[in-house]
Image (cartoon, rainbow, N blue to C red; front, side, top):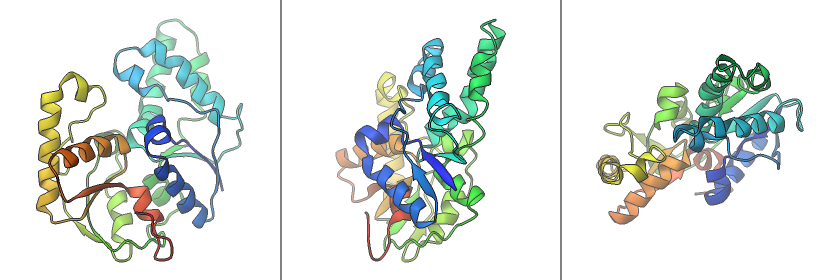
Length: 256
């Protein structure tokens, strides 16, 4: 199987180790991973802030890069980001339909149609496409899992991340109180409503601390960035780790 890694701009800029972990993990599972160098922002920040027309060229570029017209021939497009995965799967079709409704033709919807259904968040790709939950990982830590909003509500990841974590040797998974509550990041929400965002982040960190876990993990580094910043300010003993880095970790080559 040949897949394209859609790393996302947050990971590319701030968390490259997550991308390396995805490559290591998928390669270990026998997947051929390609990284299309022309990839850019998916347009989520523009779209969510109200600049929807400005997001359309980025969506079209995504299709050009990852679709048949680009390096192409991919069986799947895999991303370690629930929010960017949701942008492609949930909001790209809306963009295409809106362009059609506004009389701007079928071209955007047609361009996006091939890439939308084969874009997967990492954990759903592992469970639904590869059909695995035990990925051969070893991670001797106590861990609590935060289901990020886009993964939980837009992609419906459900128990997939937890099933993968429970199969990791040495890992003790502890339930997070208030797990389904937003961490307070929400992209530009954290900037426009900083006081509310900070209070929500504090609640999330305190709940994580109450579990006694060493690590809080999630499937989206944007949320982990917000939670991790809150942990630093509160001098918390818990640390944020992306689930990809846990699943890629082995006894021979621990990553985190």
